[in-house]
Length: 333
Ligand code: GDP
Image (cartoon, rainbow, N blue to C red; front, side, top):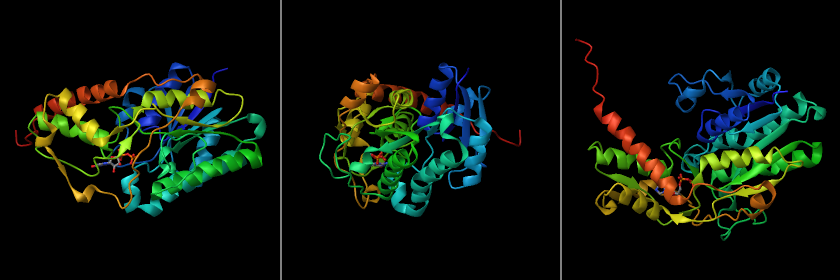
């Protein structure tokens, strides 16, 4: 029998890679999509005829319940969230409602609308941001010190997942994901902001790149590898928590240097530190130890930092080149 999967947030970076992976494994795929008048489906346009889309929102319980009823999933992947840390300082309530309460609404809907015998398995993406100031390298045992509204919301959802395991026997696995990137990363995240700017600088469409804290260290891996880890977690006999990380960290400045070097540009000529991009609190050093995932899931990151930067730079140089050739249509002609 074909397995059915429901991917919430399937139009996002992780959701889109998960859909591709699940289709490769011949799942019948359902995607839970927030309605948008401006269209937010560019990452999954190439999958349109292979995925059944269901409109809904994590802040709207009946729509989650309907999605479960329609898709009757064996596996549910909760990739929907307000996932930008900086934005969470500006929209703390919305972030708590989607990223924290949204996960709880999903767990509760799975509990009340499916029976345990159906054995529905849920993937919850937890975040390295939950560790905050705890010193690196961080493992599954490292204490949480959430230092942003986003981190607080993810910590709430992480604890709720474990409570639902203990109280109701639900299968909810948590990937404690360190930063993950790709050419599909949202442009408000620092890596994509850098590579997009680089393309526009190369093609004369931008002259300055304004950034905030260049000293922050992050552990960046490829979103495809994180999707693979998520799937592996739901193939185990028991739900558990796993750190998913490359094990190597770099500063934002090192990312900038690497990207600009690849394009043959001197970054110092273009990058300006702008206090407007500093956060009220910023986590200094995230670097994960994924030994548990390597041992139990047989998971390994497959893309190095340099190859990740290369893929993003190559993609965004090409994209900017295409954009620079687009001529506006003159409606009078
Ligand atoms: P995060 O680790 O989930 O917050 O992912 P981001 O990609 O948003 O940010 C990574 C790090 O880059 C954080 O320490 C930010 O403070 C830092 N950073 C520096 N300049 C910028 C910027 O202009 N935009 C963003 N998003 N982050 C920046």
